[in-house]
Amino acid sequence: MTPGCQMSVVERTARERRAANGPRVVPAELRRANAARRAERFKPYERTPAPRGLTTKQWLSRNLAEFASLVTTTVPLGIGYWFADRFADLFYRFSPGYRGNVIDNLRRVLGDDADLDLLRAKARQTFRYSARNFYDLMRVRRLPAAALERSVQVIGSWEPVERAIGRGKGVIFVTGHLGAFDFAGQMIPLRGYHSVLVTVRTVSEFIHEGVTYLRASKGFDLEEATPGGLRRLMRALRQGGTIGLATDRDFVRNGVPVRFFGHETTLPAGAVRLALETGAPIVVMISRRHRHRHTFTLEEPFWVEKSGDLDADIRRGLERVVGRLEQHIRVAPEQWVMFQRVWPAAPPPPIAVFPVGSPLEGRVLGGETSSKAAEPKPPPP
Image (cartoon, rainbow, N blue to C red):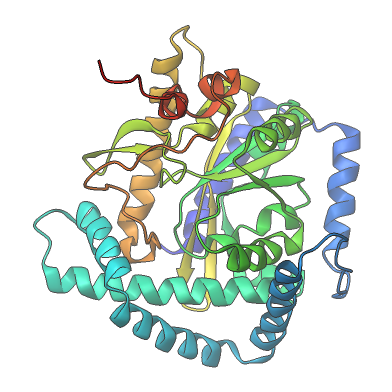
């Protein structure tokens, strides 16, 4: 089925549901704010002045990102992708560690009996897709909003999202590292929603500064997974905003045990915990590449109901998210650009994100795992 056919079925279903539910209600002030943000999309590119207090390393990283954005929006896209593919081929050849990680992840998706040659071919494609994703991210800064919107076809309807926002509890977007998620995900701030993107630094500080600078260039606010960042996420939801989190890798190492593609691992439950804490619905969003274009799929919002058993509620909500991620990853496993092992042979030690004994730790993100990791071990008898 073509993306266009999928969209027509989804939109027809949405119209039928709207007819049954009555007209949507969005607060007037929220409607005006969204309209103002949409108007901002068509302003010509203007370089914003650097904020005060940047270190030399941060200043250099941002300026290199600006230069990369200038180059990638000047070079024809086909030529840019060709160079990205060649860089990916070199990276694939000379990075045995990352290559092994990607092959191991693909084996869990395709089956333990998958042919090794097939796994290697898929892994090479994954490296190429990742390089193209980074190339597209560099284009975001200077690419006009209208051109960006022409490159991304939205499958699904924004109407359920706006109705959910109209309830005053915000919306939690959950995704995985599938397709050009940084590029296609810009549809959220371009739609006019105030959105906060949760990030975790997995690369050097210099690269991370440039990447976050590019990610925020179309209107995302960025927050790292810290106690202060968590409080701001909850505040954003309670003010009717949206947040975005990736849930296909336990980067902070304080996730919840779950079966993912039939194998035990841990995945972050932050989105589910925030949904339980604030009453915000979860919307699974998935991006996918189609040659030089992208699709951006919005699924129906769902709410995680409270039963009185917090652990059971978290497990049930996370399993629902995981099931949707599995379905989308199976369609195009080579587009799952995950370079760390999702199923490590030996679980790494957890990272203590919150101070020992912090109530936020147990209530929202990581149970008691990181507190226990932070506690000193008793001396031997």
